[in-house]
Length: 535
Image 1 (cartoon, one colour):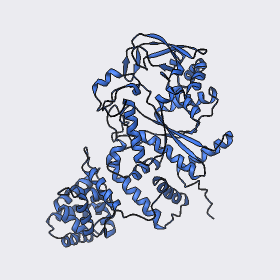
Image 2 (tube, rainbow, N blue to C red):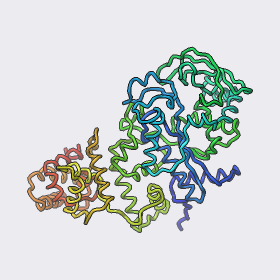
Image 3 (cartoon, rainbow, N blue to C red):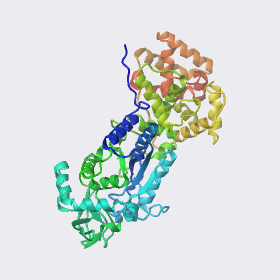
């Protein structure tokens, strides 16, 4: 007898995390009237997919909490009072003059916002809006100016010696045994990372500091030598990362925040400060790995190897990017725009399954697939399945368009292939996305595929002889001839050739398709994509 399996919510990791948050909050005895989750918004350069991923994942947990019957809110906290550590790739060199300055006080290099920080934050907020993510925005610079963190700053500075000792014990860093975890903006030069606070007067809420040489990124930034004082309630300074998270969690009543691997040590310290200094139980965390480029390097603003949300959404649907984030939380992933077709087709497969009426005998898998589709659809799936055409086929057809009427050309070809009966706004959007993807800069060839010997032989012979075919009937006849010659079934040959030509196991009528693209081009495509299998 099969043991009954308990499925939490919709069966995804989002539901498991939401359940952990709820269970923990009940044990803590805290109010569940509103459960806030948080995401930091980077404001130091061009936002990339990793940056927006923080907010998307946290929003997914918010949806899961609401699905479980609780009211939730996503706080998007902009780190726009952080200092500029390096000039990102593609930004003007004159920004070197503003290294260590708060990004909220640096001019916008592009002239469209009040500051560098506001420009960077606006780009990320724009992408969140495009993705349908609803959030409450909090500017770090405004939070300090308005005194949102004042009580937490005072408690942290009053306990700075204890905190410095604990940081050394936890992560081996001795810096905060010498300096306070608070950096004022230098009144003389305007920089923030070069100021070191050495004493705190609790009566006047004032720190004494000096502006001196400081390690910044891979080098050093010279201080101006100024010595002065700053009142911490004036909003002209900020907490160090190893205490700021704790302050804002307590001030904003945050119950969950996902964390990246690179800040795990800072989060451990902040958790301790939150619990033991601010008397606020820290939020529940889940840890995720960083996105990497195809060479395995971390995507970064400074190296310029990033993929921006805007670039992705210029080529693909919001659902595909949400799926990328919701699919799983663990493990590092290599990501580039080359992956767009994979996630577009994978979302289509989820939609096909969702509306098929089928149920996988593995109830956990069934729930997860359906839940993943619903969350990627922001819990508002369409009423019926949409018409799906393999993304790579759309990209190939769009790349052949002889004039500007991309949609008309592609639709006519799809109708001639017998793949669609008519058109729809959804299909037209997909054609435009696919055209943008096909025409993007830096497009790379796919990795060679591997096939069984008999399938490889049939593909090799088809590629060699198809260049001489003059009609669709000849192409079809050739296909069945090589299938029979190599002892294959049509269900072995056609999925293989379609996987090469259109990135899917199903595709258009082969004859008309080959005539449109040309036998020579199809043959080259088969050889390139199959690599060593055909040699």
